[in-house]
Length: 445
Image (cartoon, rainbow, N blue to C red; front, side):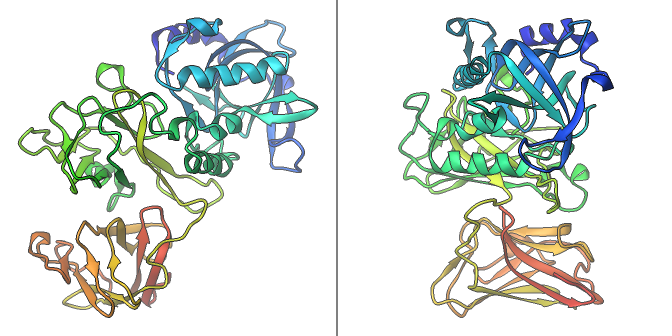
């Protein structure tokens, strides 16, 4: 948390924020009742529940009785603006008080006792110890992060170092979203502006080339599925991490003139560029570095998400990736790719099904040679990319994108990009579901 009071609490405890002494910890399974993997584990007494993802504790065996601030790993609850040990005095963003109260109830049921666990005992987050937090209630261990996620009261915040719960919390978030619980109830904070208009969001989380050198290659795209424009005045967009924006709102706060046209789209690019009322459908956050985690398809189960909130704090649209449950796609089994790697270079996308295919929200990716999960460039299909049964859409690597036609598109890349000696191209959803992949020469899918 980055609020003033919590910063003061952290400052008071700064001398105690260092990793606990080795003799205060023991090795035990990260998840009680399993055989592994193993974590460093501490028992502690809670002295203060700051909010839905932060507590203060004194570790058992610490003769100094130092108070340490603990940040729950893997989750990010909404922000409090007034912290208090008395629930009635707490004030915060929508869902922040509910998340705090939920954590407090479970800790009280455990008589103020918690177990902390870390894969790396030196894990920190902004001066706070980063830990999984468990309570023993009714003779069983309960993970507070999972409980908060299951109620839909926090965003999924995967971590590369403390990765043991990444997949588990992602599944919990998906279940909460499907059940419209907590944050995922779009009217939980009251009837908001244009509540009747459905919105659809995509996140392009993997910029072409090195992400750090192409920050604007990451973007959010929002589509208005309704029959009238939607004003985004006072709305904000964020990923799962916390970056404060204008008016102490998390993330990017949309200007008063921003809107999504009826049936149309708005794009928010993560890097810098003009924000002009004359071009209200293309905006820039101007972050100095990429914000979205890339999917590595390894044991860390990394991913991320994009979240759009209205002025009341209701979550009106969200997009998390990679797909973790119910991973299907309407294009599966209905598309065949073919690659022509010599001049003129192109990828052919053929509809082999019996109904028209809408490619919007799907992306062609040219792989980094020899890699299944790293890519050198991509082509994101926009609205109107519809292919009838038996038709083929040709996507050429060169040309000018604005010159595209219904069945002919251009990536606009200068020079050759499809290596003659071999590589692979895949068609994927932005949730990383692979629709089809074709390799040639020395390449592989």
